[in-house]
Structure formats: C-alpha cells, structure tokens
Image (tube, rainbow, N blue to C red; front, side):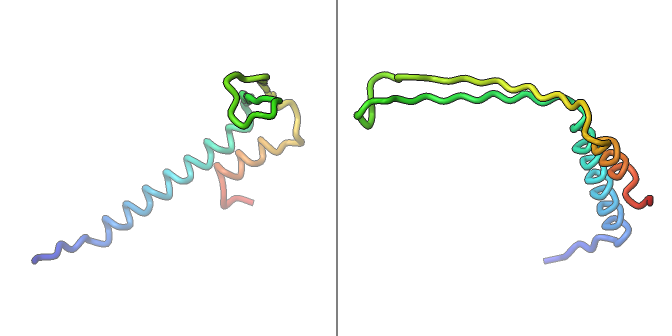
Length: 88
C-alpha cells in the first residue's frame, strides 16, 4: 500500500483557513448581542388524580421579546475584542 505525503504548506493553509473561520464565527457571536431575542415557551398539564388523563386540564403559552437597550458597552467591547483579539 502506498502512502500519500501531504506537503506541510497545505497543512499550514488548512490550519490558517480553520483559524479564519473560527475568528469569523466569534465576530458573528459577538455581534448577535446587538439584536433582539425572541423566545416561545409552552406547557400542558392536568390537575387530577389520574396518571394519564384523556384530556388536558390546562395549557400555557408564553412569548418573550428582549431588546438590548444599554448594558454598559459590553456589546461594543465584546465585538471589538472579537474583531481585534491581539490589540490592547
């Protein structure tokens, strides 16, 4: 069986490409704090003495919208540090 040797320059290229993708993902995560978040919750239940009832006694649905108004510059500085991780 013949083995194929991969030149080190290809390995460095793939490593640099992976680091660039990770850096872009970090910036995307940091910028996500600037946008509103929406969550939806729900539950079903019963209040009887039966373990598996044929009907549901109550249900609840909740929606939560969170808007980032002010948090002391955390969003700005986390995005800045993700864009320029080696700067002071």
